[in-house]
Image 1 (tube, rainbow, N blue to C red):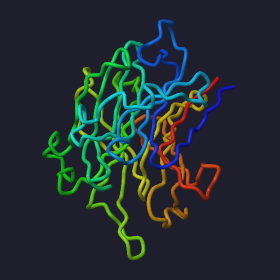
Image 2 (tube, rainbow, N blue to C red; image 1 turned 180 degrees about the vertical axis):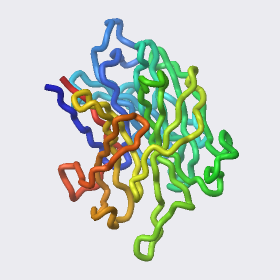
Image 3 (cartoon, rainbow, N blue to C red; image 1 turned 90 degrees about the vertical axis):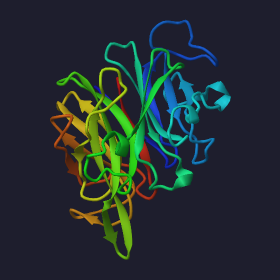
Length: 290
């Protein structure tokens, strides 16, 4: 029987897990062929030094050993317009020959409503990467609402293969000032999940399209395909100040929505999944295990 494991990571440690990649030594890829380990790509904290790509490796998926003595494996100032990155997510290509990484282009010290882009990267060995930074206002100057004065967040991109279109779909959370809503006497930033398709070179994306609007703020989407039910499951974080959404008391928790198509429409389940309802969580990812 197949099991879906939800791996929950605490706030500020938004990371990606890649299952079954080629193993790393401390400085180079091991010579043993085939998938032998789990790679953990992460950033460590909100400082400029913490907002860098780091690697850790594991044989069991639970116990990880940092690589490169815990130091960054990719310098953020070499790939990011903001000179900082967050939320690295890696996936292996369908033919197994290439790895794709997507990241948030952001430096949190500039503020939580200060970024408007993501980074696309590709590699054949997980060490040497080609990259392209996508600044949404610059790339899509005619897209209404995505101008620099209105767009304030492009967060936590991830990639999934769309078998119908035979393309890689990148999805991410978008925050805009014109979407903000009142919660009591405060204003809550409103995040919706959008998607684009990568070009064949993984250097550009198509015009953003709405993937999922929860009705209140939602971030950190993670899509997996349930082969038994033949549906896509979108896990996301219920974000922001607590309010009432469709009868649900919102909080910082894990939720899910389902669709027969990877691009939606997704129908949300109005319940929280995280086991400890008293602790906020975000940046989770699901891994199907045998």
